[in-house]
Length: 261
Image 1 (spheres, rainbow, N blue to C red):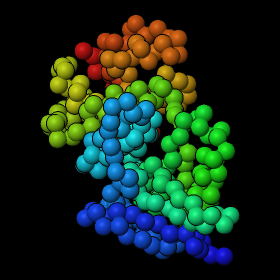
Image 2: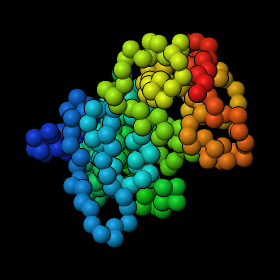
Image 3: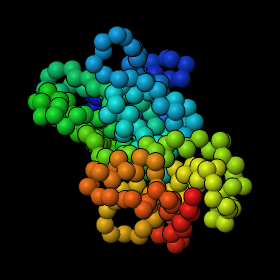
Image 4: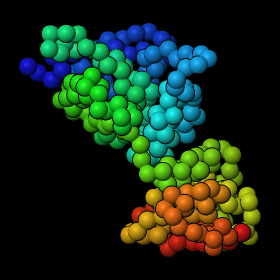
C-alpha cells in the first residue's frame, strides 16, 4: 500500500469551510492558515486551562488547551526555525485494524524544509495503552508522509522559566530600534535593559536559555528578576548576579557583553 492510502485529513479554512484531502496529497500551505479543528469552550469547574497566546511568530493569537500545551507553544514561539504555528491543525482519519480511527494533533510547526506535528501529553498519560495506540498509528502515518512527529511532556524548568521571561519582551513594536544599535555603549537604565531583553527573544541576538549549566560558550542571559527562584532549582546561590545582565549572540559569534545597572 502507498503512503497514507485510505487516510484523509480534514481541516478548517480561514473562512471556516471544512476541506478534505488524502493524507498523501494534502499541502502544508493549506494547513498553514487552518483554524483550530475543535471549538474551544470555557466553563466553570473544567479540569484544564484553555486560553490564547499572542505569538510573535504569527503576529496573532494561537489557542492552547492546557498549561502544558502553553509551555510547548511558548518554546515554539521562541524557536527561530519555526515560521508558522498552527493549533489543532487538522483531523486525521484512517482505517486501523478494521476500525475507523481519528486523531487531532495539538500543533503543527512549519519552517524551511521542516514539518513537525506535535502532540503534548503529560508523562503519566503516555503509560495508558489507548494513548500509546493512538499516537502509534497516527505518527506512523504522518512519518510515512515525510513529516516529523513529536510527543512532548515537558522540559528543563530553567529553560522554560528563562524563555517565559523573555516572552514578556516579544512584541518588537514596543521597542525603539535605535536603542539596540546603542545598547552596548548606552548608559545603564531600565529602558536599555528592556530593549536588550526584547532583542534576545529574536535573532540575531537570540540567547541560550539553559543556564545554569556547563559547557559551551557563555552567552546566556542572566540577571532575570526571577533568577533567584530559578537558581534554587539547581541549589545554587547567585547573590552577585542581580547587578548585571550578560548578553551575547547565539553561537558564540561575538564576545559576551555585560551591562550593569
